[in-house]
Image (cartoon, rainbow, N blue to C red; front, side, top):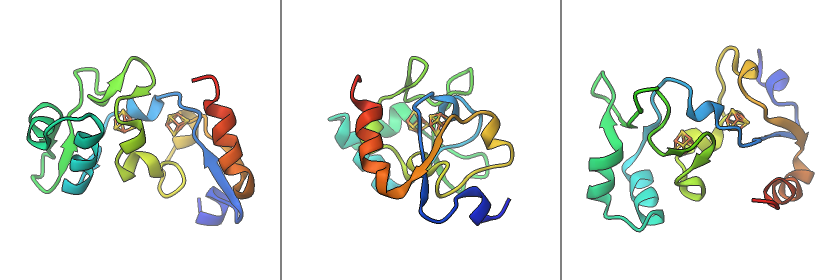
Length: 129
Ligand code: SF4
Ligand code: SF4
């Protein structure tokens, strides 16, 4: 799928907060800056955040959020609530607009909307939460 097909000009995918991507196996790569931001959001010392929620990828190249035994993200609360929603890492906030994977549509309920309508659509989506 090329970029234009995935994300037509003037459009944007609006996440529907189903939590499926948070339950998908695979690393959530995080930077030091992102760790500080998440720790700050949780009013937690960054060292404590590292101890509780962060590990190293098998190749030793990156830091990643720990996965629970069922392979969901350790910061997933219940089925679809992210504990650091307003401070989530770029990998999470970017999907599926800035990156995606083969077969992503089978598990993601994001809706394609006009970019101009995006901010209002976010308000509508979150109004009962
Ligand atoms: S940090 Fe939040 S949005 Fe990202 S995978 Fe974990 S629970 Fe999901
Ligand atoms: S799978 Fe798609 S709709 Fe569901 S939380 Fe992830 S980005 Fe949002």
